[in-house]
Length: 241
Image (cartoon, rainbow, N blue to C red):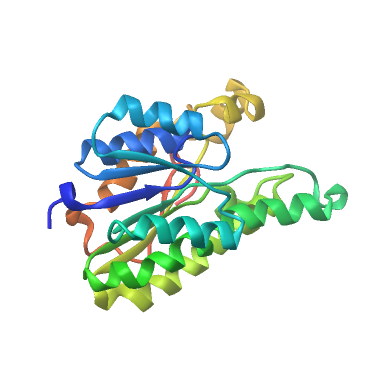
């Protein structure tokens, strides 16, 4: 089956990195479903820009019921064979001063969101004998980062879930992998990491470009990556192996 027949759902697809991932998958021939949490306008603007083979959807991935309803509507049009779990938020504070709400919300979106969106897609995907589950993590899950116990915990949770899911689904032609970016250009990085700090942290001496992350996601979503399974792939300019 060619990518022109494959539908790809990208959670957080209306965001900076998510939008670039949507463009890369669209360029590879997929029909891309651009997900937003509340801001459907940004998702719709991207869909209008992409033209054909793109649709927009909005729901809160941390809400199990809303996710179930939304995925049922999407599956009515046929299986979704590629899911990119890119939705995530961060709400930083040292753990000693972190509120329960900060802890819970970050984990709800990244980790519970992964389950809420991916789980309903798996059996329809398995019936096609081809599928890709790709989750976007962070170098914080591998190295830790001050002020991000919640974010690092959520993203590290994706690692364990992905390794287990890869074992469960491999015989059905489905792969599950993680892409773990380092510091990526964009508003979030500029706030947290001044250029001199990036030079000190990153052996490559610069932040990554969203396109460099999206290229790895697009590869993992392709037929060429059929034997890459259960991997945590760092895209971080040499910060960690």
